[in-house]
Length: 451
Image (tube, rainbow, N blue to C red; front, top):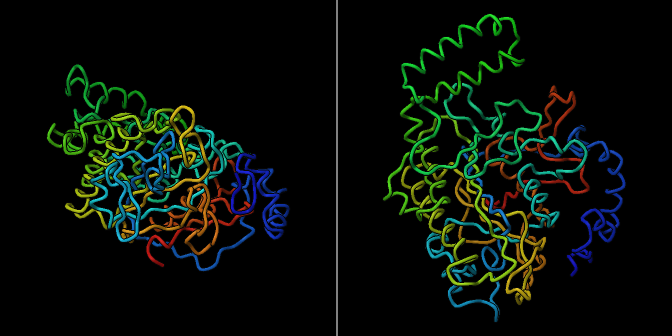
């Protein structure tokens, strides 16, 4: 199978440069030497002109659809003999969408933009999942300690006086973290059930807790006083103080507490619970700026269309939770400044199903964007009839949209200069928010806002 440059899509990503136009190949050689040391460490060689972030978002809700959903069954619908009746494909002002699979989102299709010209760099789950979360090759040079996009947002927009951490990760026990950034920019992991936030009370009661916390603070006072901020005990005390602010705090408790009726509205499942929590975090407005919801698995190599399982079950949960979240964000006024991004680590094979009645891994993929004044009811990019390659990228760069472009889009939406390079890190070198030493120069997808 070939991409738009005539490359075999099954070849390693690095080898696919050789068949690109000569100018792209020259660019590859020009930057190959600098890439060896890790492109995240070097000053930009390609200054971008007129850097103007969009700045329409205060918050981001990033839904990582782990396992990789079939793009031709979801955000880039292609109808064929394989399409089951329950998908009830429909078009809305020319926009194809599986109404039967996601009926609630179909009802709010005017709020949603579907990006169909996205290309993954790799089709190995762990590698590609990390790639879309850090916006760069996870195994190249010092990218192995690069921070999560949410940690960069925390660094830029975090409020030290707020109670909640800036970066909240829901329904994941671990993942890409703060890398070499300060621990204060690490994600706060929690899997909400509606019964409150665990570990925010002491088994012996608040009086015993206050007494013991005071004793600990007193014992450590001399040691902390003799340490500079950011080193050892002083840094630990900052974390203790932040954690203490969450203990016996009814405002924090209310974020993670919700009744069965609300659960039912959101689908009564773990994804719905995470969506409720995301809503509550934004309503509370006490520090959370980047909220990630991990939701999977969409890895349907077999029996993808089995009734009430696999694709149908996952899509039902995604549809009920996300549509309810959109409606509540509209009702409480946080919709205009909240951007929602939802996609997986790559797409899946197209056309008839494999021998196991499923779909395998594919580098072509699509994503859903909404909120933050994004113009909905339309798609960006067009794929061919099969859905395995792009015929019209649909944006200013006239090429595939890569994970790094989505990273730049998130930063731009939040008002962050995506070309920024920070210095003075623990590495002693510069770190580029979005890699600038690749053969491809990355940009925000401003077409989401109609520009």
